[in-house]
Image (cartoon, rainbow, N blue to C red; front, top):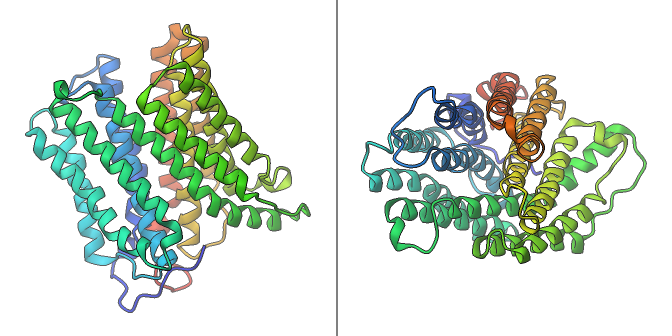
Length: 403
């Protein structure tokens, strides 16, 4: 990871000094809020006019609210280092934050506002992020990261597909949840692509810090195979979700991810929490693909079990890992994670395990354990991050540098 570019006129508010600061904090605080209408409806505590099924609303806000903020914070922080361009700071960054907040407000009122307005406000945010990042990624310095821009464009198209399926459901060959699955699968590919760069840096730091002597070796062919099989799975899952052929492709993709994991520095280095976070995210990705594959081949198993491992486990843990690593690196601190992150990780792992395993092994306790308990653990996980990092994100760098 290269250091951030200097800025001749740093903003007065440290929180607007770099995009990761407001977006990581807002995403962590919003993560539990996106559960409320769905969980409240499941428990029959309250019912909101959402304009769509609560499950679709909840999935939208998890992907295009929570994850979108995390992704914006990551890209708008990484791209300036990759492409050597000036970062988005100050008033323009504040305007982008307000645009994200406007999208969240509009979607909470989706049952009362005109649907086209809700869609337009929510599409504006990723369009602005992509419009800012794409020219930099097309430059000679940023071109090797262009795949992330392409994937972001794919997520944007999936979001557009969701609104079309919501506003004109009878005129499209796909349903309301299909674009959501596609967007999530594209995010999984993004995790695999970014792991190629991040894991090399983080693994080296963990090996050196732990005093391990095992030399690091990452095979490009294995990394490319892992990404390629995920791409094939995303395509098959969109065209023929639940089909046995898609199940076999999911199992092949799982094998490719497991093969890639075998090269990571297992042993003492894994005791470093920043490496453990990334490893567990990739382990959930592997396990989720196995479950998706098996449930496509065994009709008696619930098909959504593997989705929870992928979306909550892989994506949720990857987001937490990026929050933690970038939050330290870009505020001028060493990679010593706060103790609260151990609790956050434990809550996230247990919550994902309950969400994934209970429908398979204890279906009669689905509501109490797999919904309520898992939601409470998800809340504790991201509030734990916010508690541990709020001061860092809201205050200036201790070394006096911009960023």
